[in-house]
Each structure stands twice: as structure tokens, then as C-alpha cells.
Image (cartoon, rainbow, N blue to C red):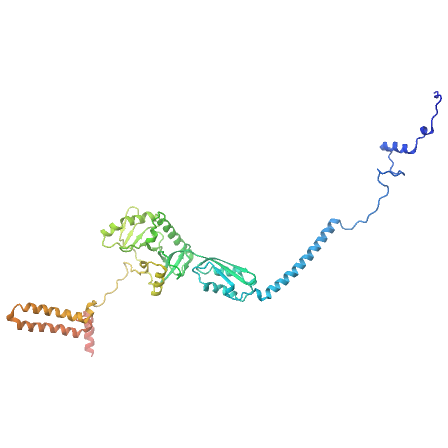
Length: 427
């Protein structure tokens, strides 16, 4: 090979510098050498700084720290609550001092005395130790109370809210009179209010509420039907007999006389309208209209022979007066004797009021004497004889009056005469 003339090869061309050699080696990935002595800003340093590591992870350590802080807060709060509890238990500020600290609302027929019979035991007690649920249950045992709520207000005040029952009728139970609600609960008569309700019969003393409830359901249905047309027929009723739910009987308070109407167990309004339509005609047809049986669709029975029922106990004068003041109609206060009851025996003899007056008795004995004289004076020839006869007729009457002064000159019955004869023989 021929050499180029006039040219020389430089040493840098034959032996390149170290920097160019490193650049070429970097370009070739297979020849990268990490142990380059020369430092470059684009390469990671050869030596790494060693760091100490904890035995627990950082997240676990943070959680433990928060747990310790929360425990401390809970301990402080517990200590504070314990102190407050001790203060509330021991301090006189939280005691119910008197009945003035017990506020009662919703009372109309319930008296304050009935409320205090339950809540009076809480006077002097710490307000935080009063069993509110127990007191609520005891208040709802009062017949007039349908529901109640008891609330405490710091420092020492109680509030009682009462919701009373709504009466729908009077109920005659034995010799007593009550008010009754739609569920069958009996309440005492209220002196504060006057009601206009019928009296329900057929309630027995000592029967459970489950027995009265279906009867009151039938009564409510009957009243709803009678008032559905807007005529308010239920206001004409003085009594409602619910002893037999298959034969509901009502007593109509009519000015011409009360009438017992059998309405059966359904269709009350239609049957009652039949009575209202024909009542006047029945009164003209019969001497006395006492009862009407409308239970049957194809026939009407006027004044039927009713079966014997248990005699209703008579009301005492005090109960009758209280019932009348509460609004019970006078027709419902009477104690009636059934048609099959034993008749009351008549006395041995009966005296009228005018016969008990001695002056009236003497006037009655003188009347026939005057008439006898008037008749005899028509014949003057026999005037002396007639006078003798008049005297002789008047004497037996006066003798009879002396013998029986208590009877006003009337002859006693044979039983009394025999008794008087025996007494005379004994003397």
C-alpha cells in the first residue's frame, strides 16, 4: 500500500484520549463500567450513606401514639364523670323539695290527689334516682288516664303530662253508675262535667275488660249507624241493653212513654226508622205501647212477652243524685220490675187520703142524715117518727167511729177484725 505523500498521522488519531474512549464505551451498553473514576453529575454516586432503621414501622408507631393519647383523655373524662356523679348524688340541689316542684298538665277529670298518690313518694328523693318508667306505668293504672309521660328537669323539677280517656256512655254495674269509654274501661263519675249519654246495661261486677270490649264495639257500631243519616237518633236513647249481642235492645225516651225496642245484631238504622215511622199508629192501636220487636224482616211484634231477666239492683239515693248531676236521663234511673216478677202483695185494707182525715169522715157520716131528714120532712104527719129514725140511724155510725177510730169510721178487713177480737179477749 502506498503512503500518502506529504501527510503525517497524528498521535491523537492513532491513540484517542481517555474521555473519548469513555464516551464510546457508554454508547455501547455491553461495555458499561460503573467503576468510573471520574464523577459525572448525571450518574449515581458510588458510596451510599447508611441510615438507622427503627424496630417498628412508622405507621404502627403513630397508631400507638394516638392510642395512648385517647387513653389519657378517657381517663380524665372518667375521673370528671365520677366527680359529677358524686356531686349529683350528694348535693341537695337535685332533691324534689315539695309538690310545687311537680308540674302536672292535661288534667280535666283526673284530680291532683290521684296524681300525688303516685308521685308523692318522689318528694325528698334525688331527681336522678326517680324511676320514670315505673311512675309512668302506675299513672296509667288510674282509670281516667289513657297514657302518661314523666320527665325530669335539672335541677329538681318533674313534669307529668296526662292524656285522659274519652267517655262515650254511662254504664250501670250493679248498684253503681260509671262512665265508660270505647274500649270498655270504667271511670268514676266526674263532678266537673255533665254528659248526655245513654246508660248501658248488661255489665256485671268483676268481669274482665276482655268481656266488656266486644259489647262496646257493638254499641259503637250501633251509635255510628243511628247518627250516620244526620238525624242523631242516638240522643233519643236513654238505655242500651248489651247483655245479648244477638239482640241489642234500646229504650227510647219518648214524651208519650218510654218504649223498649229490639234492634237485633245489625241493620240498626233501618229498623229504628221503622219504629219512628209507626210509633204513633201503634200507640193509637194499643192501649199502652211498651215494647217493639224489630229483629225479624217479615214481621213486627208489638208488646211481646219478654223472657225473664235478672232484676237490676236499685240505685242508692246518693248514687242516683250523682248520676242525675252527671247527665243521666231520669228514665234510666228507674228500677223496673219485669213482667214475670212476683207481684207485690196488697195490704189487708187500704185507706184513701181523705179517709185518714177525721173531719172528712164525720162529714161523710152526716150526709146520709141530712138526706133522710129532707126526705121525711116532705110528710109533716110523720115528722116526729122520722126524727126518731134519724137519730137511731146516726148512732150506729158514731159507735162504729168510736170502735175503729184509726180507720176513719171504716170497717176493717176480716183479718184485722179477728186480731182485734183476740186482743180484746186477752184483756
